Image 1 (cartoon, one colour):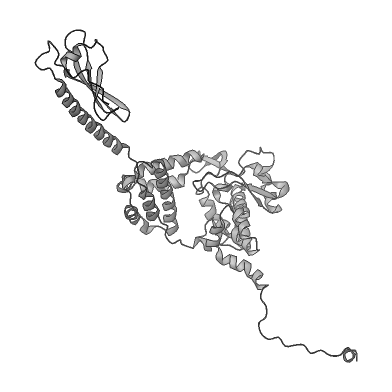
Image 2: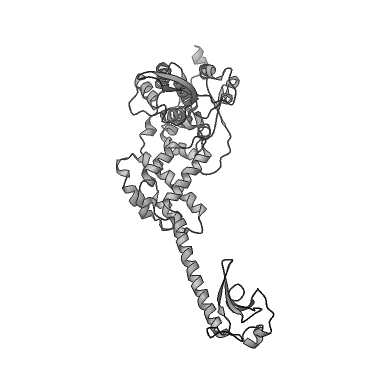
Length: 437
């Protein structure tokens, strides 16, 4: 039952005690809605005050003087104050709503903010940052103003496809897929972080728009025979008198690990007594991966060639280092310090020289060492699951990209089950006495 009003007439208001806090009465919306207040003054007529609560925020404003005894002609009666309070409340709701829309438009997540946040997150997770990924995203995504300014809530597969058509004509399929993977990861991270502001359908649009192209299999075909691998390793040592580049190629060939994994090896990861190298796991994927190293067996010859960089060094020091030089003259350089290799593009020149010395094709990439290691293991009937574990990948990836070599490796096993199906001529038996004669 509604409480009787104490402020709806001048007579009732005259009985109220003076107070700086108004006497409130609900007008609309119940508790937390629009309220009309009367502030009793110790001298002269009181005044009307309107109040509204929106999203937990309280807003009050004085409407004018009440029509108490002795009030001026411009004073407001109770019914007029109710009408004025409702009009004021509607104006407040409209103002706050428009401000919210403007603020939302200013802070609405866009493709640009999603990519920038993704780059920053990768830089935090990786001590040296990720120059390759950041460079690709800045060059192809952030530089495209039309696509980068698109709000995530309005992102569609068609918009992504239009962006792809503006740059993908002159790029290899593998390069395009690599960029699409990075973009998909950035957009998905933004969707997860802004679920209330981004419609649920956007995730499907991103998945459809960033669908990978049919992969070019050329890189997968770069599998070198063992003799070519040995020539390449020797060439790597020959072109670099320090042996730094040679040891890098040696470890990559022996373990089949990615450059980013080999670059993070420490001295203690080489377990000489057990002839194995503890390779750190890769940093690919969004899920937090437990940093459990992978024990990869290597030959004693590999351990012997690594002795110069594991003897008399602390276990936490980087295993593979290179000299950093500075120019001190027009054609003179001076060695300054030794640092880790860093990004995979750093040894590009040394790789090209070693490749030419070894007599390999000009399009041979450093990743061929990993492909060759995987195929070598499959060719000697190492189980596919073990091959995947040693190379920090999945069984599905091995089966997808190396299925032909799996068939070759298991052919000998399958051949053991072959049985002759043609009729077999019976061997005639002769008496023992006849044989003895």
